[in-house]
Length: 360
Length: 224
Image (cartoon, rainbow over all chains, first blue to last red; front, side, top):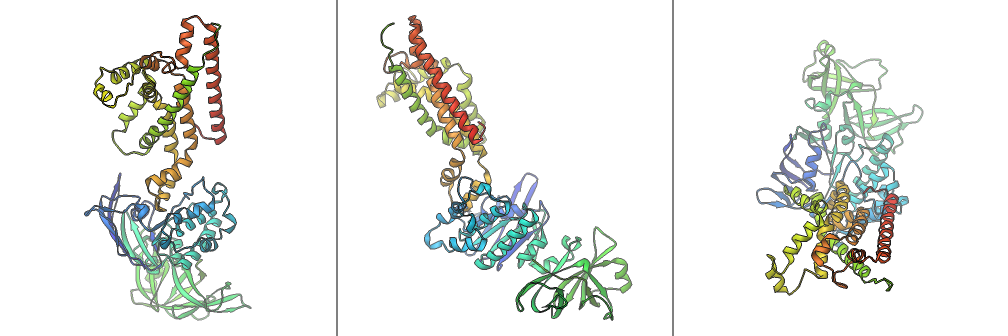
């Protein structure tokens, strides 16, 4: 898998991007952070759409940019696919001609993705002869993704490809996107201000703030890092990878094996043995010092407290990071409860999980 | 007065307008692109220079061109070297018309070039298209209305030109005597019906051209 590494210094007015980064992948790397953090600027530097004042960029064994040696490979000679928030389809071309624009400009030997595969993977068959001006937002983004994939890129750069869409369009495009990212196994950088959305696609995650990459790691570790602002949000959550164990048709429940225990969730339509990611919202996790007796909650996990902090902007709340057989799990409780339970790093607790859902 | 209407000036005017429009599209397109997307600090100077023919009396422009292109001008050695005579010749008229009508080509083109969405140009770059490729595969198709407007305006504006031609080309039948000059001659000689025939023809033709232009533009919903 292609490794991307380098550093950039780019000033635009009062904004300064000044960061090093190093991402080995594999698969999808999410680039997250609040708006204005410099995610898009960093992505544009990777694409060659911005020329930083200083820095360098190495992709695989090629150098695409080196300010000191005055190397700058222009975008048209970088092996990239680039998809933006607002689709930039060519209005004078049909869907099919849009899709083929990039692959036409490739040498035959460099053309790995085929039109049929891309059309199939993104469900574009019925759109091929349409004009792009009368496509829906979601359809336009699917075409834009297909056009980028047909460039057979070494790196696919996705800049908030679904954030301009409505909820239905978003779910639709994400479903197709996940499907083709898996199918073409293309190294991707996925920019999003929505950590939850990014975490569903990504293995690795970079967190940016004020023009710098400030944290990096496995998606589920970054997501549950109590020192990053995400853990403090109301929608803070943990992700666990698991395998479907079985279904209880009568009760309408599904059993999934993750973090060395079995969790119950509302029955899902997924075959036994298939791998899935589950999400557990931090506010749905309560803690007990001893194994609870008769409770209505189905999912009770043994865990150790690994870290706990007061939520910076909500001083009545405490964010607790637990270790469940090596997997991080976030819980949000009141500071009053944390005091009453005398929670410390290392304290043995039982996590009562009110609701588990598949992360789709 | 009763002689058949001599249509040579009309043919000459049409030829001058066509040649001028073609040359202007060739020169004006890169210039307009540079004005729309260039990054030079000195763009404003070039821009002022391009608009100058709009505000200057054509006689001023014609006078200086006469000096510049004439046998006693600063570039006389050059004209002698390449053995062309630019004043009182068709070639001289073309040069004068090109300068005179330059803004009428550059401005419509600059307008449409500025509206070519930058994300589309960037997308084309990331899809492997170099600058020239991007221009022809993305910018030109998005700017067709501007090219049409520029060509029509250059043609029509040259057709109606008088002052520059008079200063630069004189009044040589078949060589520099264009339609507007011929009309002037007819009036001087009190041949009003001939002047009328040519003038009315010019009015009708110009109106028709502009009407067609605005019709196509309203259909394309592109403002000039």
